[in-house]
Image (cartoon, rainbow, N blue to C red):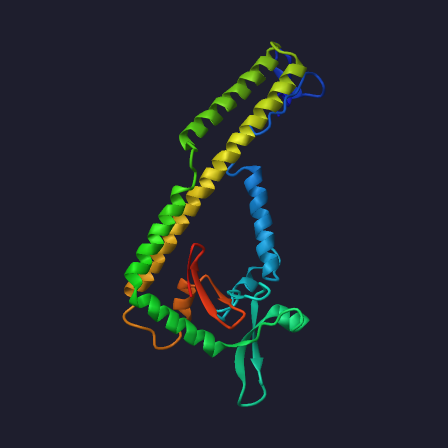
Length: 275
């Protein structure tokens, strides 16, 4: 807001709160935000969605952590729901830990036909999967690098980040000049309001494009970071697994999908999947 105060006496230079002494001007989006309103709103919605998916509420971070490596990572191939850890025969010596589809648990077999899977079966499946991955680790990492670079090439096609910044600065200068014209009385209020609205719409559109470019850059960096982590984990490993390693599982696997026939698929990254 400009002209919140005005000078009422040019001899004493006394300034007072502008209570209808003179026009006031509201300049929207004149300062560069850290992120655009669109990106901010999208992030808040994503946070809420992830919280609800984990039966959590925003701000309650304690529920996000788990002592079980498979928690939140097993997906039902029948209905798409997540699996939950349960203990069968908990009161006798034959007890065992299993993972079962939450739809089956809550709604019964009419809603989902997926059977429970023994935790030890999952652990052994990871051991077998990792050992195959480890044997061919050089080729696997090279393939992932190539696929990721192919994805990266398709990001931001035709968008010149420097040109965007130049256009944003030009529009901001135009807005400042427009405000100055109005303050000096060179344009009337109707023309000012219409042109100010148009320029701010252009500015918001340019900023949204810039935010998309920025998010894509973050995505590129995250992809490369994941590959580096996987390459490091495979590189420092000395030999095949003989038993389940929860930390290694957490470092490599994004999710597990259980097929309708009981097949177990391990997923490293969004663009790479080994079964």
